[in-house]
Image (tube, rainbow, N blue to C red; front, side):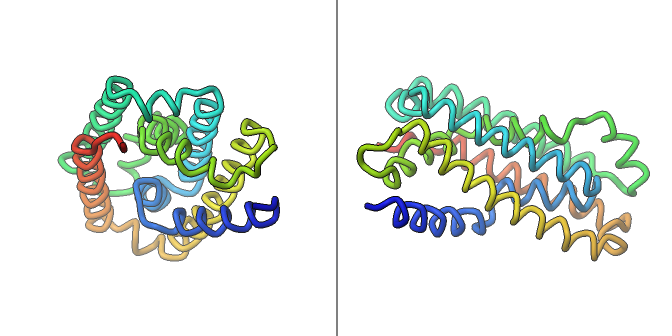
Length: 207
C-alpha cells in the first residue's frame, strides 16, 4: 500500500467512524446545549487528549497488552463502566431545570477532564487503535510516527464534526435551553451513558 493510498483509505474509514453516533457525540451535544460552547470546546479538547494518550500507549505497547491480557482489559473496562454509570445516574436522577441552575451547579466541573476520562477509560479505543491503525502503516515506515500521524487525522475529523454539532446547537439554543428541554436532555444523555456503561461492562476482549 502506497502512502497516498494508506492516507486516503484511513481518512475514509476514520470519517465513517467519526460520523457513527457514539459516546463522544452524545457528550458534545449535551455539553454544548446545556453548558454552552466554551464547555463543549473544552470537552472536545479533552476527548482529543484522550485519543493522543491512547496513541502514546499503543505506540509504547500498552494497547497490545490490553489486546492480549484479560486482566488488563477487564481492569480498564470495569473502571470505565463505573465512570460512565456514575455520570449517567447523576444526569438521569438529578436533571437540571434551567440554564442558570446548570451554570451554578456545573461551573466548577472541568469539561476537559470529563472528555479526557470518558475517552481514556474506554478500552475499546485502545483496541481500535491497536487493531485498526497497523493496517494503514506502509511497510518500511516508522510505526510510532505513523500511529501519531493517523491519530491526528482522526482528531481533525472529530474536531470538525464536533464544531458542526456545536454550531447546530447554537442556532437552536433558545429552544434547547428551555427548562423542560434541559431536563429531557440531561435524562436522555444519562440514559445513553448508562447504556454505554452496560455495553462496556458486558463486552469481551476481542480474540
